[in-house]
Image (tube, rainbow, N blue to C red; front, side, top):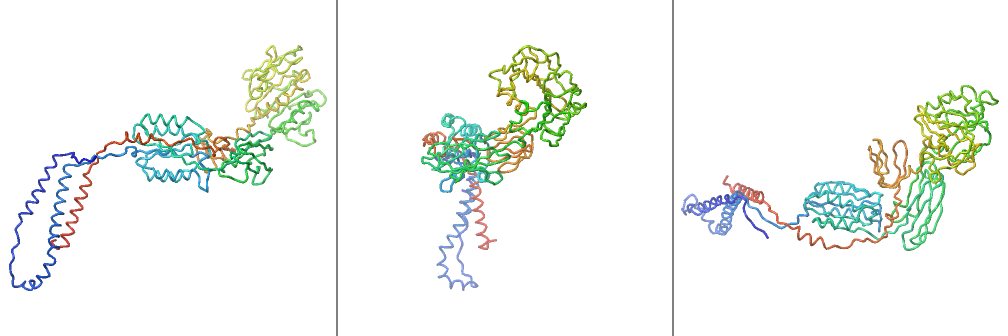
Length: 624
């Protein structure tokens, strides 16, 4: 329905001017025919002039028509006419949800799902546009901008390597629209792996009269990919799944610095998983599947290790081939030097060393100053300087410990030796003692020293009478541990947990970093000190880093590996569960509204056009 009412009806009085103009035009004097001798020659062309009479009359009427339309237009503008039309209010605001997850990189005949989605999204923009990138955490790429800006943003968006969260993206779109009329259009393969169910969210939107359209861009891609990576300090296990309905042959290649370390060829049955174990290379390495397939993002996985793999340990002892020495030598991440007092600069292999440049020093069963091969006077003063400057020290209890002058290094008040059997139980569960969590009393001892932990220290284990036996404390910039278990009076040295305990306590004191902290899944948000970060796609300065690309990230002077490794996201063969919906048509019927379109400017422009045409015509005729 179209109506033509007026906002200022009183302005219609201006139409009187049209009536006056017509009256004046009709009353103008008629021309009289007179014969003027000087113009006689014109009469000779009378016959020819009559041929143009019709054209002249038309031109005269044209001038009248232009003047009439100009006056009529100006009169109508005074009345402010407007037209009431039906239109789709949902076109006022458009929210595009663009799936940028890993599965959108799946290709068919060289065209990815993402490329298809972007091209389709460019065609639906209208009114004020917003764009949401749906990855594991929905991100707003654009909000409330015109179509030209939206087209520019769409052309710059790239797919990520994360899982999909369409449900939260829909809720975010709902918040962007608020009470404004508009529509939400989702371009995805609808392989939703995270977040609330999209059908439930869609039903919620429909109940609030919000239109949500689902555009399925899935294809018939085939895929074999890395779905799991178990990275440990010594070895790594990679899992590869064939998502196809037919068996495939793949080569699993491990490389570092573009050099192949190892590779193997495996045949993977349809919809089956194969795994491969290899020694974890130091630094940055890469796992690749060959040949590549329709989804290349999961054909590659990266591995990163901490900058420092081995901890240097100095064992000062007069006892050769002790259980402790064997336990430390067995640890792959410990670089051990054993020295026998009084000489601390030559190790047991007759090599010259720098004793106070080790990560940690262990004093275990040494001879006192007044004994043969005893410790040199002043040694503990040097060790104390080493600790104060950031060194780490472990002092093991021995029979004559009270007679050895260690200055202020001991973090316990040592008392008399107690000769009675006791259980040794964990007081604090932490990185060192977590192996004893299920059985907190992990060993027994026939004798031990009475000891009271000093203020500011932490007791890890104690005897039945609460005597502190394993105590941790800090001294200026360094750390000190008192190991109060007399190995000769306990069976702890023969237990499998003994070498694990020593390896754990060394890693704890040195602050050794867990290799798992250097290998992450995409989608992780890291909170860091604001700094320049190098990502697989660019460099940026930030304090909150979203790891949404697979590859190597560099910050804090370290390198981290980030991979997709998600079985659900890699299953691009899974058919879309999105069906055609008829709710849009029903809702559009309710959303169609009448809108008043002001015609003042349009009519004013037409009147100006008529007046300009009149001016040009009069000028060409020679009247001015």
